[in-house]
Length: 311
Image (cartoon, rainbow, N blue to C red; front, top):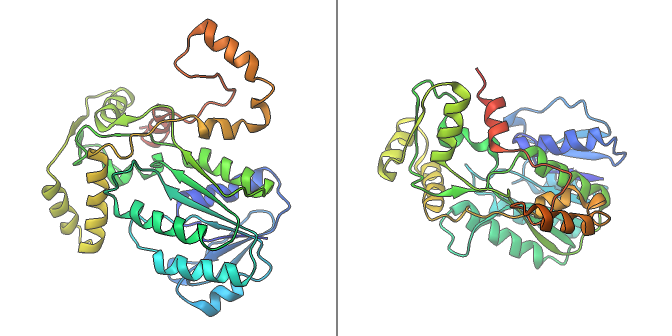
């Protein structure tokens, strides 16, 4: 049985959708906190367990009959380190056979508080003795409202991101990989970096939105202090404000400017090997920008913006 720690964020829910579409017969237990509302699920072989990440008795109950653990909470607004310590301890006591942890990408200079916390959890998992798969995922496109808001009627994007670039990825693409790895269940103590082939600045986002909306949208890289004041005016705690501003600092320093092809290769793992030779030949003849041509096309930022911000 698979234990999924969170489906409130888009990624956890997309994993359930992907497992359901594959008609997976592996039973899934979803952890849910009553304070956030217990979800009503319509997926195959899925049950809800009322659990608090900070309550050991409820965690012990949730781990009954579990052999695979997926830790996928978004830590944008909350520090989960103590909760994850409880999780990993329960996983050890329950003799869980595989931990999959959704972490964050970043270059060696780490400014984001979230990334720093993720690295601590990675080390805790590695030292647990439990076979693991760690997925360092770049910023999800679905998190764009954190940066540009849910409304662009003002025709401006105000964010202290400077000229920093991000290799945004789609939650659905990442969820597809996670579902395949959970079904395959062959942990190799591996760390994968999942990012897009292309990185984008907020100027790029404004340009693509302008084309989609039919009018000019401007990006203004505001000062960090102005951003923090605006967040405080929204009655966010200073703790949350500092977390969000640390992400902005990391973006300015291009710590999320990572691109790669691992995500695309994992999405095509069944078909990539037979096509490898022809793919290389095609590349040399066509001189495409990508090192290999794969059949799968990652969700592009343009496609996401067209769907998410369509009039």
